[in-house]
Length: 177
Image (cartoon, rainbow, N blue to C red; front, side, top):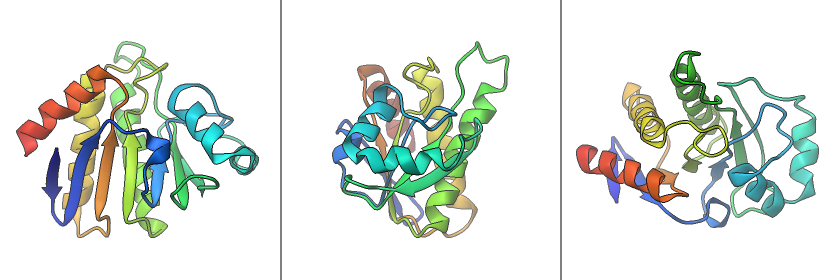
């Protein structure tokens, strides 16, 4: 499924994020930026030990913010590491923090000359953010970001890793398509 927002092609895919040939992949990072399970663990393993060494230089990242590193052994030149919130029932600003991590990822991409980017469902794994809510927030923020002014992003891929995430994005793409 593909939709267009301005000049940018936005699509949903069920491929492995570490196998995609894009300028940058977005990692679902922890505040320590030291790796973990899920998407973060697979990116760390595929990228190789240089990634962890570079991440250590940042001394972490706040929830809602993001950092950028080299891509190392991945096809793309960059990895963007936003830190999404742990779901605690929507009473602790989780939606705002997730939206902020999405926006920071896109801002960092543009500043660093990224034209194509792959984004996973941030905070939906071990952080337990509801998949449908995360999809609505992610697509909404991408749409706002691309519509504010002419952006140089050519393609954004939402990478789905579970049936629930896939269904959530499919429903949104039908509405926005």
